[in-house]
Length: 491
Image 1 (cartoon, rainbow, N blue to C red):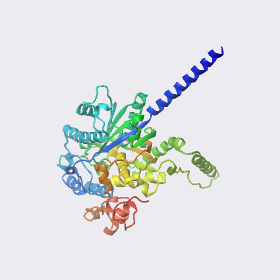
Image 2 (cartoon, rainbow, N blue to C red):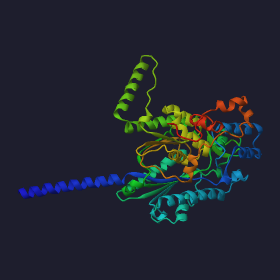
Image 3 (cartoon, one colour):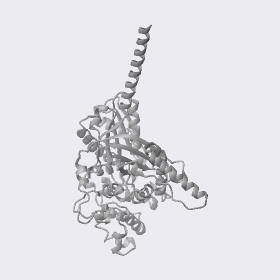
Image 4 (cartoon, rainbow, N blue to C red):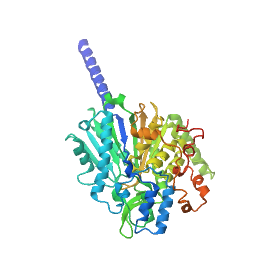
C-alpha cells in the first residue's frame, strides 16, 4: 500500500510539473516581440514644399483669393517643413483628377520599398509570415491591398491575411493588436506577423470650398511603415521591443467624437474629409478614458495610493465649495519615453498639457510633424525611429505609444506599453533622423507670406515658437543652448 501511495504522489507531482511547464511555454509563446520595422521614404521628386503648395492653390479654378489666403495661413502655422512628400498627382498637376491606377501606384511603390527592406534587414522571408495585417484607411480596392502584397511576395497559401480600412490615425495600434491576438491564437506554436500601415493620399484631394474640409491638405502627407512581430521565444534576443500591454478605447458613441473627422459631401457635392474644431478636445477626452483603464495596470502601489488620496481630497473640497486642483497621474512613473501621434500642433499641445509632459517629451512628435507631416496610421513608427536615431532608447526602457484617430470608426485612443530590449540598428532613415535638425529650420517662405499672418514680420517667428517648428531655429525647437552646433538630445 505504501508503494502504491508513493507512486500516486509521484504521478500527481509529475502531472503538476507538466501542467506548470506547459503553462510556462504558453506564456512565453503568447508574448509579442517587435523584431524590426521600416519607415518609408518616398523619392525626392515627390517632395511638397510650400512653394509647390502655393502653385497647386493658384491653379485651382474653384478657389477664390480668400480661400487661398486661408489655406496658406494654415500651412504656415501647421508645423510642417519643406521636406514632406505628396502623391505624384499633386506634383504633376493632376491633384483634382486622380485615377484608380494612381492610387494603386502610390501603394505599390510603398509596398515594394518598405516591405522588401524589412525582409532584407531581418533575414526573414515572405514564406515565413503566418499573419498579414494591412491598414490603409481611405483606399480599399478589390482585390484587397493585402492580396496584392501576398501576390507580389509569393506568400504561403495558408497565411492569414486581414485588410483594415476606416481606422484612421489610430489604426496602426489596432493592426498591432489584431496581429498580436492572431499570434496568441496560434500559441504554443511560434508564429510571425507582418503589419503594414499607410495612407493613400492621391484620391483624397478636396476640390470644394468648405474650409473644414480643406484642412487635410495642410496636414496629411505620404508615408508608411512595415513591422514584423513574433511570438517565438527563440527570437527574443533579436527583438527590439516586447509588447507588454495594449489598451484600446473608442468614444464613438459621443456626438462630438463621432463627427470629429468625417468623410462626407459638402453642399455642392464635392467629397472630402472634414476636420471639426472639437478635434483636440475630443482627443484629450478619449485619451483620459483610455488612461483610466491603463493606470491600474501599470502604476505602482505608491503612485496609485497618491492618486487616490489626491482624488478623494479634491472631491471633499468641492463638496465644501472650496476650489481644488485636479488629480493628475505622474506619467513618468508609467513610461520613460512617449511616442505620441503627431496629428498636428494643436493636438500635440493638448495631449502635452493633459499628460503634464515637458517639451523634451513631445520633441520627437514635433520634429516628425515638421519632417514628414501627418502620415496618419504610420506616424508613431516615425516618432519611434527618431527616438532610436537620437540614441534615446536604452535596454529596459518603457515606451508609451499613443495612437489617436477618428476617421471611419469614431474617435478612439489606443495605448501600447513596450519595453526596449536592445539598441536598434540604423537604416537610411535612422541616418536621416540623426542629421535632424541641420542648422536652421526656418521656412524660406515666411517672409514672402508674412502679411497673411496679420502681424508684424518681426513677430511671426517668435510668436509661433514651439507652435510652428519650421519657423524657429533648431536650438529654439529642441531647447538646446546656442553653443551646440549639431543635434544632441537634451540631457
